[in-house]
Length: 360
Image 1 (cartoon, one colour):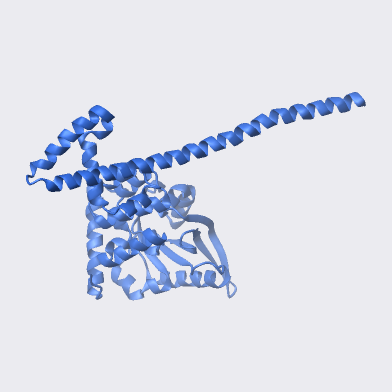
Image 2 (image 1 turned 45 degrees about the vertical axis):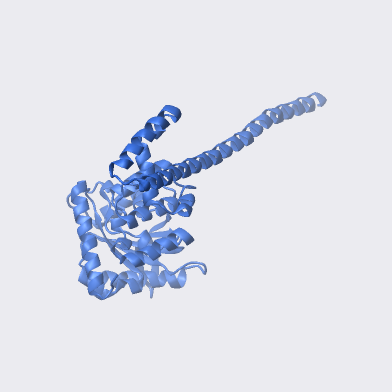
């Protein structure tokens, strides 16, 4: 008996000895990883500010020149000297980027804030965006939602800015909304929802039924949420609600973390119909009464349909009911065609706003 107890004690001690180094290793590993990550962020922010300061200094120097060629001469000479001493990171092309970086982001405090989340590669990706509002939108959304460089590039290529209601607003109103995003991290529905949504990843071809659309969305939920944007959490499909003894079924129910509200998504095969408004209002009022928590905002609805007529949308005044209507495209368009179509949509939307008496 004593022998067995002794053996058991030795086994326990051996197990403790083995587990102790493992626990120690995991703790130290965590410390190393956290420190490396912290150092990487610090180094990245330092480099970004260095490039901004270089751009600033070169701009000051070029402004002294009286000839147009003066700037080009400076960059050539400066680059040759810097490359010989500090390496290929200071080629003429890279220095031009630093100058452009300062030109497009002249506010030092904004750059300091952005550089905590955005790497130099992020800024390089944003620099070619010509529209100043779009450039600020991508930079701030990238900061808030912590996009990778690849994600940022995809968002720009898919013309995310042009697909938000922000792009159709008068410039002064858009600037106010972006300022709130920058200073308060305040996301509004106009920044979150888009039109159209690209659902080409669903693989739907030719004719399909509404249930096929929903099944495809559920199958590709990860891609669907990526297209919806950061902050959406999937809660339920075909959620049953009972009103006056009648059962109704909500297609998809989400919660948006930043908006702090429930989001109902209804999928429609054809064009938007006025009857869709009544259906969505019923769902939203039910959720507002029975499922909204005290710290949440009023639920909001998104009707995804194959198309919509703008006068119908305007007459129904859907915004007051907390309802958004967006088209979805199940096939990807060539880039030139996409740009032409979206730019025309933005132009027409702005024209409609002006006709309603909203002026810049």
